Length: 379
Image 1 (tube, helix red, strand yellow):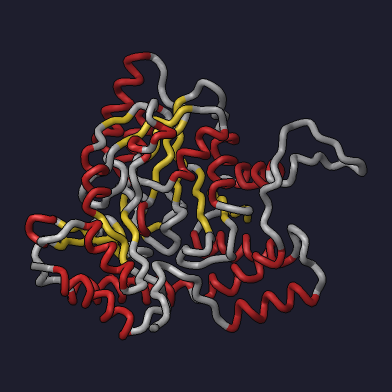
Image 2 (cartoon, helix red, strand yellow; image 1 turned 135 degrees about the horizontal axis):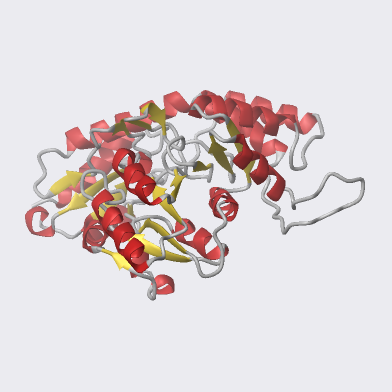
């Protein structure tokens, strides 16, 4: 049997190994250490922000961002409905209630018009959301010119969930900027399936060092500067280990190559499947450059002759991992009681959307096999 083709596996190289061994041999294996400090500096420079704080996960970063913005019990936070559960879960960790905003078709990200409508409605009711968490979906920035303008009108803070979008760019009123650098606070993930990985980890970034300094304090159990263990605030065990930061430094050095490979995968799929009826791809919005972290397509079952699920099962038979796009949060049982503005666009994207194998180490033969399965099912 040929080896399984995974959706988005880790892609490691010699620098990661050398840095990891160096960290191991130094015996600095506990959380914090020189590689954590270096990773934060190098990452901030790459992202074009003033400062960064390395954390145990992207979810931890989202939680800390909301805590630092004063989100608490009884508050409302707007967020994208088409996202991974971690985005909404972090809102509940802070004691708040998520309200979901539908996608727009140009990028599949949060619809700025619906966001503006939701903000206006809450303003008329005299209770604005405490924050808006915007997700950069599948490696592509949302329409921040319009989103930031809508939030600025009401003085609502924006947190950028860039967990899936490291290496993406946004070209707008603020110039050509990195994903994660567009909101008041940005958050990244280094989970095992991301474009670069530390096996598990995340990064919180901001142009305001007060946020990253505060995050660093809270993430280290909020220990006060004293010889004994003094605590005046509730803290968290959210810091990244020195070993994992060493891996992250090596991965960051090859990020440009990894992005190039994933964009090349996307271009291949678009070309190979262009003639198939009823197949379309997640668009690349005109305001930025996507990393194509995952290549996502849409299946029109009437034109294609098969449903998205039939295609997914055909991949299962060939030991190829393909996955439906995120099931919207407003359709998840755990969030069934939460408000939603719109929802039909994200629901349709879920019903028809499939993520294809997109790893940066895919071979040409593997790409051809993935395309051949889709071609074989089309009518």
